[in-house]
Structure formats: structure tokens, C-alpha cells
Amino acid sequence: MIIQPKTRGFICTTAHPEGCAKQVERQIKYVKEQKGISGPRNVLVIGASTGYGLASRIVSAFGAGAATIGVYFDKPAEGARTASAGWYNSAAFEASAQEAGLKSYSIVGDAFSDEIKTKTIDLIKSELGQVDLVVYSVASPRRTHPKTGETFSSVIKPLGGVYTNKTVNFHTGEVSQATIEPATEDELRQTIAVMGGEDWEMWIDAMEQAGVLAEGATTVAYSYIGPEITHAVYREGTIGAAKNHLEATAKTLNDRLDSKGGRAFVSVNKALVTQSSSAIPVVPLYISALYKIMKEKGLHEGCIEQMYRLFSERLYGEGSAPVDEKGLIRVDDWEMKPDIQAEVAKVWEQLTTDNVYELSDLEGYRREFFQLFGFETDGVDYEADTNPDVAMPGLR
Image 1 (cartoon, helix red, strand yellow):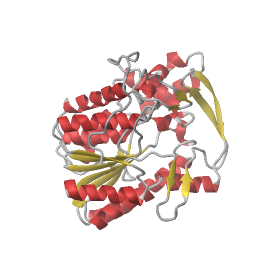
Image 2 (cartoon, rainbow, N blue to C red):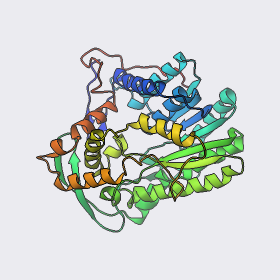
Image 3 (cartoon, one colour):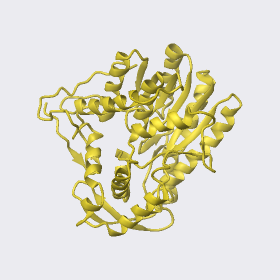
Image 4 (cartoon, rainbow, N blue to C red):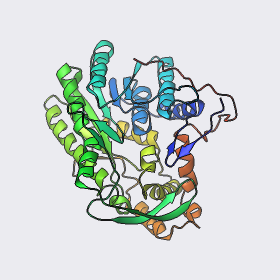
């Protein structure tokens, strides 16, 4: 079939297997060109098929030579429907890992469920024995609690009052005002249940009880803080409350693991084009302005560059991992440089529909969005007949 992008708002409902494979190959190539990492040997990545989770798995495997297990909730092709981008990404990773002689396995299912936790633990026991790094990078709009059966849905809303600011339709370039009503108490509760640290802690609990977490193991989850421009809808909104819970969970886990030489961190990463960030009003316009400035200064990084820097300089660099006053690892440090943020703030005031392509890198944002799904990628013939049915080599 001829596979073309089909969009619905901030979602692309199709994905291209060859384009996704090219993107994965590019990330692997980047890591291979860097200095090797003396780090983890057996790695579990929960939420491993896209974005920072995928990049973490690539850095672990091709930077440190680690065996990896990836857990993710993606779907294979069915009939006229393509597989999800995460499926194609993971299939490409699995094929490259096996070609390189690296152990790699995939478990597809609901990471929030007890069933998938048990299945993953059984796989660790049979193939790896124990893992010494657990990356928690789950991004989901919903979660069904494995004990109570309640299904929670997250929302992206401010707290305490109505919020209005600029946003952009990155498909059309129209800059407009977005007005968002504040969250209710129940919406806040549900967002924390989905995006907070409870499930991360459940994974660590289950692994400790099963004896598959190695002594001295590290676990890391990912967060974002960002600038004042985005705080009302992000850091000071429902998502920020969930991230506060995630960060508090890291402290709890660190206190537990410390007695066995282990560590738990939250890494605050840079703003990047992801399907999740595309859904947050204001954020795509901010990222577009940020990208232009960081690219001009030679400081721009994508997921793979961020994760290589996290692993090589922070998690597995010399000495203890450097953290800020709140105990957070900050690989958003280049984004948050005062001169970068001052320029973004200046540009932000000027942005309109008429000048958005001149003052920001909106075209780069839009292109990266489609590249998440394997489109607009160099070296791919999008007019060619393509088989959407791609096998997963390490599927268990």
C-alpha cells in the first residue's frame, strides 16, 4: 500500500515503517559515533517505543552494550491500518540489536497492569536474571488501577483560574489565543493518578519482591519544568502537580534503594517535539521559538543527544550524579540558560500569524512532528508500495 500521513489534530493516525526505521538508524548511528559508556548491563525501559524511552533504550544498548527489555503499548498493522509508530520503531531497534549481537526483548501490553508486570519479571528471571537500570518513561492519557479497577483520565489544565496565552496550529501556522478553564479537584486527582509516581513505585516494589532488581540498581523517570511562559498550563497546572508527585516518589524510592547502594532519580529534560507535547496548548509555539534560538547558538539537542548526555555525563559519569537543590538531574540546563530564555521571551511578545515562520522554527517543528511517525524523512520513497506488516523480532 501507499502510506501517506493522515492527521487528526495533534495525532497522526498512520505511520511509515521505512521512515520510522530510518529515524531509529539515525539515532543508533549517533550513539555509535560517541564515546562508549561504562554503565548498565541489563536494562528495563518501561515506555520504550518513542521519544525519551526509545532513546534511553538505544543509548543503553548501543552506548553501553546492555541487554534490554522494552515494555510498551503499541499495535501491529491490521488490514488497511498501519502499525503504530512505536511498533515500527521497536521492530527496527530489535532488528539492529540482534544484528549487533545484543540481547533485546519486547513485551507489548498495558504497563499499568499486574499482568504485564508479572510477565516482565518472568522474562527478566529467565533471560537476564536481574536488571541494574529501570527507566520509567510512560506517557499515557489513561490508566486503569490494577487493584481498584478505577480508570483515570488525565487533563491538561491550569489550577485556580482561567489561563489565556498564545498558541499555534502547527499545521496551518495560525497563531491565536488559547483560553483554558481550570481543572476540577477530581480532574487533578485523576491526572496525578495517571502521570504521577504511583505506577513507577509499583514496578519497583514488584521487582524488589521478585528479586530481579540488582543490588546497586538505578532507576530514573523523566520530567519537565520549562519557562514562565508555559508554567500556568504545565508546571503550575495539572501536569505539574503530577510531576511533583513523580519527584516525591523518586525521593521515596531513593531512600529505599540507598541502603543497597541503589539510586532513584528524576531527570528534567529539554522541551522537544513529541506527540504528548503537541497536545499541550502554548507549548508547540514555545518549542518553535526555542528551536530557532538554540539551533542558531549550536545548542540544539534531540531525544538521542539528550539521553546520551544524561547517561554519559550524569547517570554514569565520573563521581556521583550532579543534581540541583531539589535532587533533580537537569539536562534541560542548555534550554534554561538565561540568555536563551531572554531571547525566547523577547520573540514571544512579537509572534503573530504573519511572522511566525520568520521568528520561529515552526517549519522545523512541523517536520519533526511528522518524522515521529516516519514521514518527511530523507531517503524514503513515499510513493512506493510499502508493506505495513512488520514483524517484531524480540516479541515475547
